[in-house]
Length: 318
Image (tube, rainbow, N blue to C red):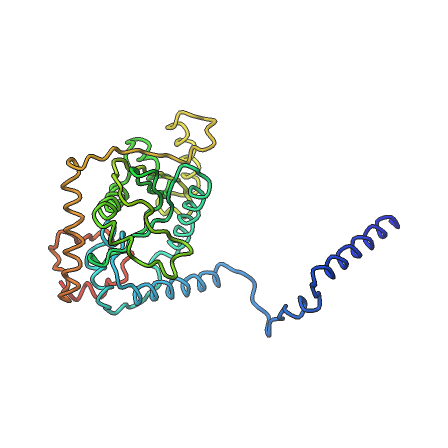
């Protein structure tokens, strides 16, 4: 016991000596710890839900009130009405997420990107920012490999992952998003490279090359089942086992990652590129004219209503 005490005193002496050398004041450190003026309640699911509602409300409100340009989700994933309502500043009854775990899904998606981008050495450019004033749109490409491949990273649920494995096909909206990047990168490269990253410089980069010839799109899917709404916990466990069987690799520790490579022929996908261009121009036209797209517009998507913040405004404009 005395030996342990001596060793402890010796350790304290070394720490104090090092603090002197580094000019560290333990008194100053202690003074920076501010005692709360009142006791804080312990974590509970109820108060966490309240915090989550507040956070989602503030985040969605800030985004709705401060976006001045279109983004990739506006063109590929969103209903044209919700985009126009947002850009024209239509009122919102409540900015909170309709399904609160969506913010958790978003966090998982961000972590997925960090995991893939921060580990693989096979990408030549990361977080490539394209801002095209002439189209009033800004997008961000996950990764580029050389001058010919766009890489898009997506997280997905077990249910979606199972479909992807069985069909060996990407989700259509994800693929369209990558096609949008190719269209913008190759047709508006000079305009995009002339932009100033400003306060985005710490996390984004401008395209490095003077020319790109994108002839491949690589989709990388990373699956997770956390917070899936379509399965119970027991069903999720069964799904995980079945997915490994689909991959025919019982001992594959990276069974949750699947990459799909698409060769891109410009002529074959000409119709798709035209459709993307029309969607951008049509959306911007409604915004410029301050008009609400009619309900028979081809870019109306009623499957997006549940998550839409503008449901009340939409009902008023039949």
